[in-house]
View (tube, helix red, strand yellow):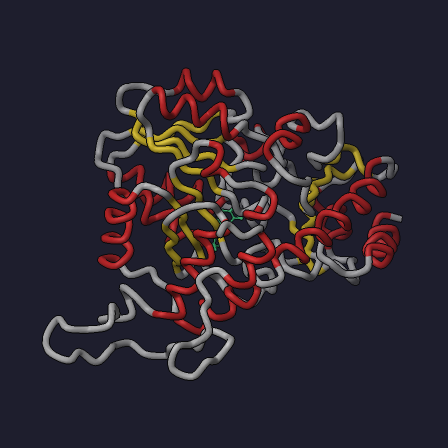
Amino acid sequence: MAYKFATKAIHAGQEADPTTGAVMTPIYQTSTYKQASPGEHKGYEYSRGTNPTRKALEDCLAALENGRFGLAFSSGMAATDTVLRVLKPGDEVVTGDDLYGGSYRIFTKVYEPYGITFKFVNTSDVSVVEEAITEKTKLIWVETPTNPTLKLADIEAIGKVAKAHKVLYVVDNTFASPYLQNPLDLGADIVMHSATKYLNGHSDVVMGALVLNDEELYKQLWFYYNAVGGTPGPQDAFLALRGIKTLHVRMRAHCENGRRVAEFLKDHPKVETIYWPGFTDHPGHEIAKKQMRDFGGMISIVLKDADLQETFRIASRFKVFTLAESLGGVESLVNHPATMTHGSIPKEAREKVGVVDNLLRLSVGIEDADDLIADLQQVLG
Ligand SMILES: *Cc1c(COP(=O)(O)O)cnc(C)c1O
């Protein structure tokens, strides 16, 4: 029977423990498993490769993304790294020009020296993506909405291009979460998550995930996952499973508060530009409406007449929002991308895509929206 999202978030992959009936999946804090005779075991040999707590999480993630196979990693970057290992020297990758800073860093600083070429293009325009493809292109890597300027890429349209050119197609779904958007349903081959963010949702775990449908590709990725070993421990897997149980409830609250905060900021005299896909004049609004179930709680603002010093002063004055990297937790965070999350991107490259010195990114949490708005009011004046 195909269950709906909330039921899957709470139950998928999580049968009561067969030995005790424990309703919560136990934390299998073990590195190894007894074998009856060499090679005769219950499906678990060594916890770098497989662990029952992690398996429950992987099955839950797969269910939420409408995929067949899930893989959990010790970070979002470990998940990204595992995908990139399918590439060989000489291969090309087409990706967005407005990416998570760590993705940009692993592409340019870790994989480019191995002879892999990355083309950073405007993924909001499908024709630009298609034009960037050559016979050497092996992978399209798309983030939508983008971080931090919340540009939208049409997942389905790029999926058709990827299929026509027989190129592997990955969507980083961290910003939307599976509650708002399911890239596999729209033609992606792999969906990637930093589970650190909305999936876990409580800012107490760093973890990543991949979900996919193709069995051969799953086996290939599982090989790298086990061979390289960026796999998470059972305690973190347990916390992520527990966090995911309220994903749907949290996301509804994030979206509701996101709308309230965005509406407050839209006409504020101190705000020069606001990026939030829920506004009808946001350039990606129509695409967002088509592929997302709601518009989320991520908002970026450019402050009017603020230099770096003034921006820092504003960023340091919040009382309910916390100045910190990361996003997607129950608590509201404010981040200065130019010096924090996107500090590893060269100044010209980031300014070209709008990551200017007076840009602040808000991860709107699920506190009372009145208090969040009052906090913004006291900070902005
Ligand atoms: C945080 C993040 C990542 C990296 O994930 P980690 O869990 O921090 O390793 C990748 N993509 C996006 C969009 C992110 O926000």
